[in-house]
Image (cartoon, rainbow, N blue to C red; front, top):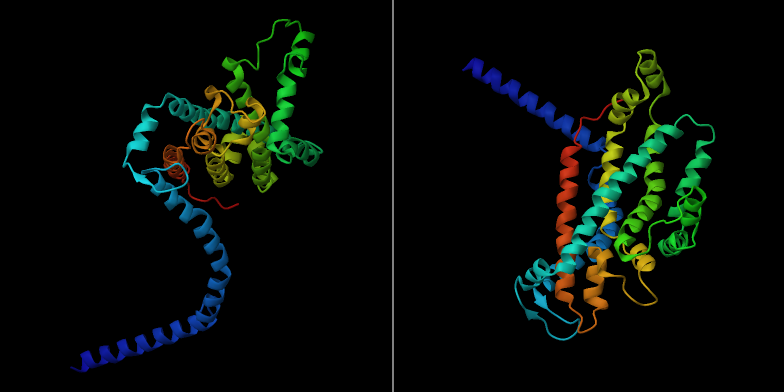
Length: 323
């Protein structure tokens, strides 16, 4: 009994000390109740904007995708009919494949060139000036860039003139329908490279120079220094850039519309991506607007992006390195 009483007394003393410590910690915790309430007030506007401009439109899009609706008047519930329309629509399949090409082919080329430029500019004098120059296309409107791209690739444009200067007198018909999407992808690589090079250079600037010196003294060549020093230390930035590209690539619209389309006319369906498909179904169809297939297309792409982002986060999950 004495032993039990002693243990109980000791336990009570420990509980009292623990309670005192928790009370003291709560008193000095910057997120205790008053400040937590203040924090919530600061977060509330952003949360409201997120709900109003993302959550509610997403719910509305999903709801519309199960209905036949011309944009006004009552909706007619059709279940999965709109998704069936997409499955059997060759234009949507072509648009979906073009979107995948943009995500993977354009994205892969953009990151390869961005990495190459990053490593080339790392020790170059005046790299900040060069960084500003390659970032310049991102400052201009996508419509302006697309018009410039059209001038470059027209029959008597700069590209064909340069090819003629090196003896190629019969260049491809760049603006022909069969080549048009390839030219668009090249343009998207050119437009995007500066932005992602800037992100990667910001990450590489954080890496201490002595790590590269030690690797060089150990006999590592440039490729080995990149693989064993640069990439591991900026892995989180690479993952973030990949997520940014995945999200932004499905929203590409203005460049394709302005480059391949006419004055008020849609481009050829061979160069459509899913953004153009949704726009055409909802706002530019020759007959009655079809908001149902447009919403279904948008929701399919939302699911695709969510899956790809999840896969990217899983594939790039690494333990953070301290340096």
